[in-house]
Every structure is written in C-alpha cells, then in structure tokens.
Amino acid sequence: MTCEELLKALNDYVDGAELTEICEEFSQHLAGCNPCQVVVDNIRQTISLYRAGQPYEMPESFQQRLGQSLKARWEEKFGPAGTAPATR
Amino acid sequence: MEDQLLDDPTETELLRQAKGGDFSAFQELADRLQPRVYGLAYRILGQAQDAEDATQQTFLALIEHIADFRQESSLATWVLRIATNHALKILRKKRTVKMIAMSDMGSEEGYGDVPHPEFIAPWSRTAEEIAQDAEVQAELEKGLEGLDEKYRLVFVLRDIEGLSVRETAEALGLTESSVKVRLLRARLALRERLTKKFGDASQAMIPDHKHS
Image (tube, rainbow over all chains, first blue to last red; front, side, top):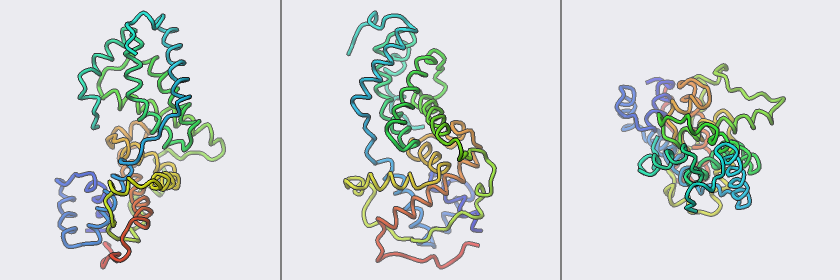
C-alpha cells in the first residue's frame, strides 16, 4: 500500500466506509500496524470531541432583536402575525 | 445527514403552517434551528457580531424562501446551506485584499504532500471525559482558528455539523474529491494538535515503516 493510498483510505476508514476494497486492505494493514490504528483512533476522538463541545450560546439580547426583526419581516410579507393562534 | 428534526412528525406540520403564514409555527422552527445556525456561523466567522449578522440574514432569507422548500433534503441541511452562504459572504467582504482561495486549483489539493502524523500516542482519556473540562472549549476554538480557512470550512460542515461529503461540496462550491483532501488535512492537523495536548506521552510511538 503506497502512502497516498493509505492517506486516502484513512479518511474513508474514519468515516466508516469499511466495505470498499481499499479500506479492506487498510483494515488488514491496521491489524499489524499499531501506530496507524492509534492515528485512526486519535482522529475519531478529535471529531467526537468537537461534536461533544459546548454549543455557542446566542446572547439573549440578540435573541430578542432577532425575534423582533423576523416578526417585522414576516408581517411585511404575510400580514399581521397575530392572526395565527399564538402558542408562545 | 443525521437529523433529529426529520424524525419529529411535527416538523412537516410546522412547515405547512408556516407556509400558510403562521408566524408562531415559523418561530418554533427557527427556535429549533437557531443554535446550529449560530454555532455554524460562529465557527466559520470566529466572532459573535459576525455570527449574529449571518444568523439574522439566514432567517430573513428563510422567510423569503420558505415557500420554495420542497423537502428534498432535511430542513436543517437546507438552512445550514443558507447559513454557510451568508457566512461566506461576510467572510469574503472582510477579506478585500487577501483573497479566499475557494477554487479547486492549487498544489495542496493532492494527497502527495499531506503532512504525516508526527506525535502518535493514545489519548489518556475519552473524548467524552475531556469534553467535560472547562478549559477544553477554548482549546478547541483555538484549534479551529489555527486552521487555514479552506480546511476549517470543510471540517465544520462535514465533521461538526454532520453534512455529507456531497452536501459539503455543494455548500462550498467544491468538488467532492477536493472536500475529501481538505478534510483529511483538517483532521490530521487537529489530530496532531489535540494529541499533543491529550495524548499519553509515555505511550508515544514511532511508525516503523514509511508507507511509500
């Protein structure tokens, strides 16, 4: 397996596409290559960590401004928003 | 993409009501989508004011175009694409001199010169455990900021927001193969950085082969 093939496979492998031919070859390589296995684990953990990170919180003042401007635009386009049953 | 909202039977209903002019239905949809839209914009733009502008523009655009939404993708995917477009516009406006290289040109698009992993070590804790640390968020943000923009964008859309490679390519106007190569660079760069921080140095290893 060449280096380039390995790097291409690394991406697909991390994404879980383990059924392709090249991934199968990569899989065999991994079984005998601890550093490569650790790199795959590191990348998966990196992605997990970013996904598990705290969401950015919208400032409350912005939330209010946003709500007002959306309502104003809605009324311009569709007429008074109050005509629909208010649920909030 | 994986999407919880898609499984919620009320999204279709809310959409129907919103298309009929019901603002409260629209607002409910917007409330659900706001954290993801704002998070995406913040990660692309790196600061709150710009993220707010992009978020507002996204939802105003959603009002304009909601009647056109045909549910060919999930609403979240569609809205995240709108948000990406607005965030990119803001980004480009701020870079009058330094052009953003969004095209597929350039030597960095191949696999040949992708930097190899240097520090290889298993992490001493799981990602879930590390995520609980108060200071980790700042470290993650610094990692994203440190990435070249074209790598950051694909990582944010594909790996954080969970868009498919194809959806990411469409949102950024790139080919899928270009997305893949940029994604690999982003992943390897962030892996290197975070492994230096969270890897167990006592178990560090050196590859005994060159893969060439």
